[in-house]
Length: 508
Image 1 (cartoon, rainbow, N blue to C red):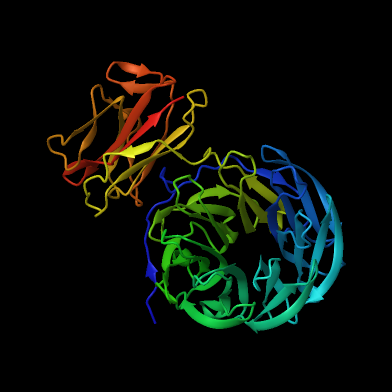
Image 2: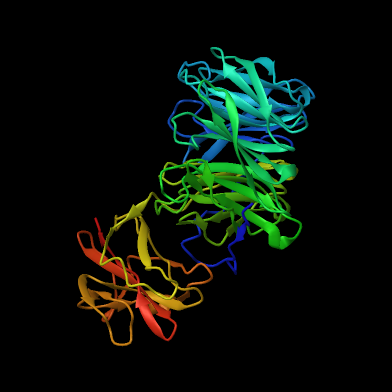
C-alpha cells in the first residue's frame, strides 16, 4: 500500500495564479433545500440554463438564463410527494435535439426522466434501481450504442446500478459493487480503450474504486485507490490534471481534524497503475463536491470544491503534474453542496453555480477571467531558480486596448520571496550583475514597483494591469492600439535574483 502524500501549501488568500477571479455571487431561490444542480441549454437559445432539485414539495426547478449569466424563473416540475429528489443530470435522452433531465429519487429507489418537449417539461415514468437510496448519478454512453445511459450510486446497499437507454426511457441492466457507502460516481475512459469506465468514492472504506468497462457496458473491478487511514472521500471528478492525455481523478476528502480537509489528486500512470494521492488543503471544513475546468485560462485544469461546514467554495489552480495551488475562497450560503461549472455569461471562461441546502438557495459566481490566454511567450525556458523550476509568465484577458482587461500571472518561483513585473516595448537578452536569470527586455524598461508582491507558498503572484497607466522611466503612459509590449517578472531568489521567461502582447 502506497503512503498518501500531503502537499503543504501554507497560507490562504494570496494573490496568485492559483486564484480564479470570481465576482460577487448572485443568489436565486429555486425552492427549499436544493440538493442537486445542473447546467444545460434547456431552451435552445445558446446559453446555459440551470436546474435544481428542491424539497417540500419535491420538484425540479429550472431557471432560465436571460443572457450575461442572470436568471429568471423558476419553471417548476413537480414530482411525487416524499420522493426526495437528489442529484440530477442533463442530456438528450430521447434523441430529439434538446436537453432532458434525469433525477435520482432517494426515497423510492428509482430514477425519473423529465422530457423536454420544445421547452415544456414532462415527467416520465420512474425506473427502479434495485438498490437503496440512490443519491448520485453519472450519464454517458456506456454500451457504445450512441445514446446516453445512466449509473446511480446507492448509498444504503453499497452498490451501483447500470441503467441502459431503451429509446428515451431506461431499463436496469445490472448492479455492481460500489464499496462501503458509495458517494459520487463518474464515467471516464481511464484505461484508454475508448469506452467509459466507472469510478466511485467509497466513503466508509476510504477508497476510490475503479471499474473497467469490458465493452458493451459490463464492468470488472480494476483498482482500489486508498485515500488515507483517517480520510474519507466524497465528491469525485475526472480530468487530465498532468497533461499526459489520460484521465486522472480528483476527490473531495475529509478527515478528523481541520488539517485533514483536502482536494486529493490521483494521477493515472497508465496500464492500470495509479500514483499515490496528492493532498492539497481545501481551505475549509467538510469538503463535499468537486469539479474541474480551466478556470484561470492558463490551459491547465483547476479544481473547485464546496466546503460544507465553512460556507465557502474554494478554487485551486492546476500547476501541472497533478499539483494544485493554494485555495482561493468565495463565501456562499449555508451548507454548500453540489457544484457545477460552465460558461454562463458567454465570455469564454467557466462560471460557478453551487446549491446551498440550508439557506434554500443557489448562488452563481461569474468568472472575471475573460477568455483564455493571450500573448506569445519568448526567451524561455528561464534559468532554473531555487525551487528547481523555470519561472513562467502568462497573460489572460483581451488584447483590445478598449477592453482594458489584461492580467499577468507569474508562477513556478521560489516561495516566500518578493518581486514585481517589468515591461518594455523592446526585447533584449542580458544577465544583469548579481542575477541568476536573463532580462529579456531592452530599451526603456518600466518597473511595476507600486505593486511589489510576495510569491507566497505556491510561488506565484498576479497583477491586473491598467492599460491607461503603464509605468515607464518617463512616467505613466497609455498602451495604444497596434503597439507591442513585453513583460517579465523579476523576483528575489535567496541571496540573488531571477526572472521568468517573457511574454509579448500585440494590442488592438
